[in-house]
Length: 150
Image 1: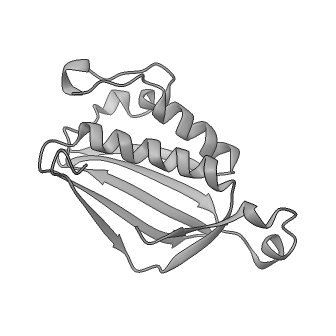
Image 2 (image 1 turned 90 degrees about the horizontal axis):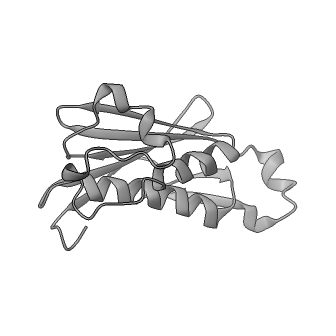
């Protein structure tokens, strides 16, 4: 992001949310989503990252100021090997990042969806919040992680 002059802007009023997750795996999933946003955001563009809670879920939205995703490809972007027009993706990619992210997020009981507009693409991740019983009964205390303000 720094090399492209991209601004990453946190938009949240949450201090932190608690979820039950494998921190390394979830970090990889979110990293893949942010890397994808960086790849498609033009020089000096911006990426907004919003964290909120809704209906018992932590909601993380990553919004870029890139060219957006064609409506017909909103689901395809999560398929292994899918690549949007390579000419629109400087630096390329393997087409695996978002497929891996979706697999990890779904393994944690969550969802990730893409939406798009003239202002860019948004990838929204929803993960179930941990309840107090899950936290107190966690067999592996490291499995309880926090998503903190970016």
